[in-house]
Image (cartoon, rainbow, N blue to C red; front, side, top):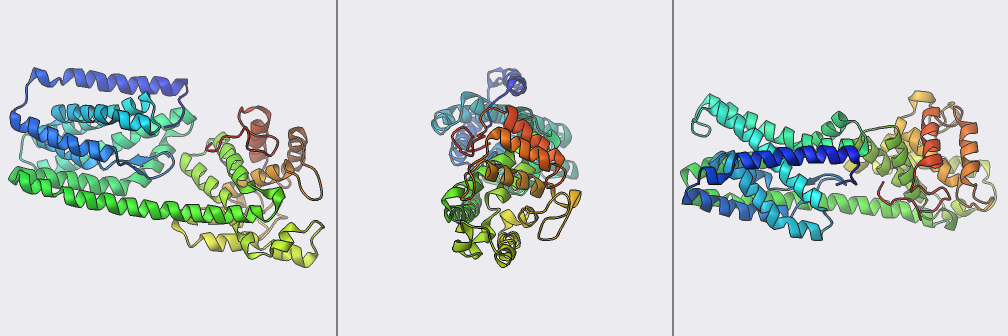
Length: 430
């Protein structure tokens, strides 16, 4: 979770209050469950604990727990009242684990509250629409399951998107749509497994237990895919870092450019999906230089016209390289056009104004700002004031005025941003 602001605290307290009221209103002591139901809840609670201690990171801000399957199965088998108490108890059991791994108390409370609210809404809808019919025994029951699954998913994702939006002052709808696209395939599989477990349980509890095997298979498959994705990302970023190390003057340049680019994107109130895409592209924006002679990159004197022509091919080379990797494909055009100029005098295609992708315009400003504030063989680093003056002078010519304005606001007043080309005061994960 992100660091909470005042509005985020208000949102968090609202969610916690709703969940608390639901738990109080559905106290199992008011209608004691039978031994069979208690035994089932105990078994499912063990599954929930295992799932919640083995979450999968879909992105920097989004984690997926395969607990979706047992949660939804439990809802269908014993109803929302027992399901939400089982969820709450399992989260309490896993709380020490999460706290040891960096969660705060409010992360744990928010996670539990999200589950309680989502299951309650989905369960209430299912109970109301199914009319007491057996699971998947009639068209009304089928529709009830489908709508309950959709409600569970939309609420679960929507509540998380809401806290991210208010914490980062970003577009909540854009954040929701981004999270929806990211999590929908995984949720669909897990919800289907939950339904299958409940259906099989109604015929044979022992066979239902065997459905834990495909759930483990889904988990292993997702973990392998996400691990490969993370390893690919790390490999590309290490290659980009190698480019910077060719020249002692540009060490960690791409890392700083990515930090500035993400800050600018958030200053422009872009969605978290856009911010992430721009940051990824900025981190490897100079990857194409790997195919250019190291001597040329380190040359202390000015480049010849032929050397300049070769150097100017690096955006196209970088874009061609990253187009082979799905996670970076959306950033291909940002890398390709990060040396275009707002007045149309840039390269490789001479695009101008809004013809240049916004992400590329952002990376161009971040790239140039960091270059200005870093030492070079032919000059000393500019001060923050000098950088502001130079960016202002070239606004509307080399750079997009809107992007320059955002960068100036960052340099002039946002705490924690390095203005001397170093990372000493800049956050590593903006």
